[in-house]
Length: 55
Image (tube, rainbow, N blue to C red; front, side, top):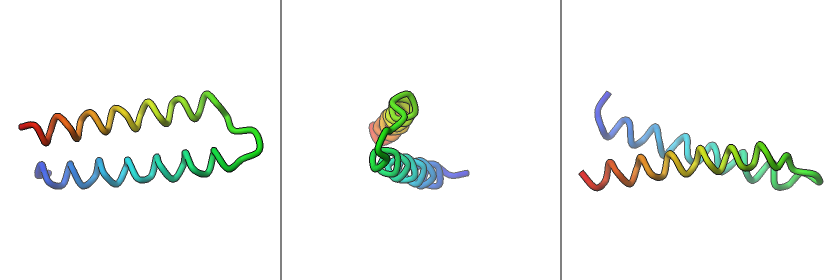
């Protein structure tokens, strides 16, 4: 897997997490633990993308 493939996969995963967060936020009583975990995972991906761009 090339670095560009990895970046593409990370961006795709980041978008999927955004969609999950949106769906959960639209619920009358969102699962706050799930929301926190999704945000944490999104931040990890963002940090990884930032470190890859810094190289």
